[in-house]
Image (spheres, rainbow, N blue to C red):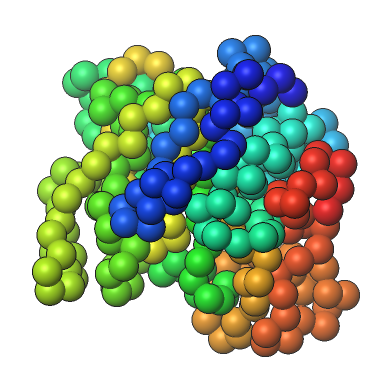
Length: 294
Ligand SMILES: O=C(O)CCC(=O)C(=O)O
């Protein structure tokens, strides 16, 4: 995998960068992946959606199958299990290095990836493939404390026309909002729900505009959503959900049973409250073991 020269600069964040993150709950870095790598990733993402798995291991959760409507969002969890090109991108050390600095922590693990393909539906077709407003931690309460964070690697670039992600600035400091039912394909994202807004805070939306190869980061409590893609081309994103190394398992939340099952497997079936999220399926991104192991 080729990382552009600029990436060497990008990986060292300034104190102002980290304060911006702490204040706003999101952060953007310029392109850190070369065009050739993005092209290869798009091709391999298409193979995973077509259920061609070069490792012979399927991803652990599919939300789209060949034959489903093409106007739906294609969404697969843990594509890195199935494909080595996706794996190299997801385990890219610079992503973990940036996350560690943002979280002011000395270790970062992969929680899971997500391959997203938001189809271009053109100007006139009914709204589809939107993601409604939500906070990731609302359904990740099996990970405690709630300091998880996410990197989104843009393969095509993200604009308001192609349904870039939108965030509410500073909402990572707000309480959890109750509505978890975010994955409506036809949500009108611009019609903001009645958020529970703490005294002194205001609702300020920010579009996360990305160049191809650019990466956005968001805190797991930051409210976010994305509109439909009104272009004629897909908007493809590789999402890397991450946990600080000190993150522990919390029992009884009913959240992410598929990831809890993977964690139990990593602990030889002896999973207990307070166990660290660790093991080969939750590899270290920082300090990095690279694509080779954990
Ligand atoms: O890229 C999108 O449209 C939504 C992604 C998302 O919800 C996430 O990364 O947590």
